[in-house]
Length: 291
Image 1 (cartoon, helix red, strand yellow):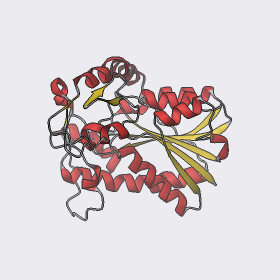
Image 2 (cartoon, one colour; image 1 turned 120 degrees about the horizontal axis):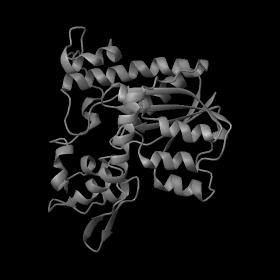
Image 3 (cartoon, helix red, strand yellow; image 1 turned 60 degrees about the vertical axis):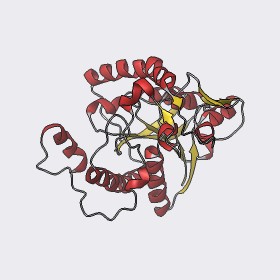
């Protein structure tokens, strides 16, 4: 079986999941290609240049982080730019929580794909370390990474068997998700972009310009400027080698000390059982996912 995976990832969480899935699918005998979703990819699709053709694969996966309880507009633009089906697809998304409100996070993406005559076989949710507002404890993040690997094994087997599994959508939470996603898409990300500025620590390396997935950052003379098309993925803020990007009045959504997924990969720490059968309060709902 030949499988193509297109993934958008801001700080690396969803890309890590894509890598786990690809590794397990290859073990089971599939040939897997991974393609990064960004503005250049979408521009090429809209111009008729074949950079990702679903008809070249037996199965196609699209991965996205949950931003504002939905996919980023960049992922929806990618789906709209794809040629019409038929074809078989699966969706996987990463979020910091398995709350039911996230079940419907891929709803708009699925609708676009089904309108193009694609059959959606699976819709997976992976919990990944929180990279927004607050950070989880280290032992919890290690538990999260371990569980992602275990879920990838399970999901790869299901995909190779061709079984169908979609997440249940809850009407009340769907309405809440739609409101928050509208606000994030139309106001939140633009407001965040306006808050960004370069500090005196900037070395002029150009990392933020080259890595911005929507080409929202540019250089004007000796100044770095931010546009209003920010996707709020945090890649520039956390990835800047000098930590020289300041969110000014929106510092509240940036984790103090930054976020680096690599801090939790390949760690042999034994303390990785944060969620247990005895977890209470806010943490109790995580039991369904981990246990």
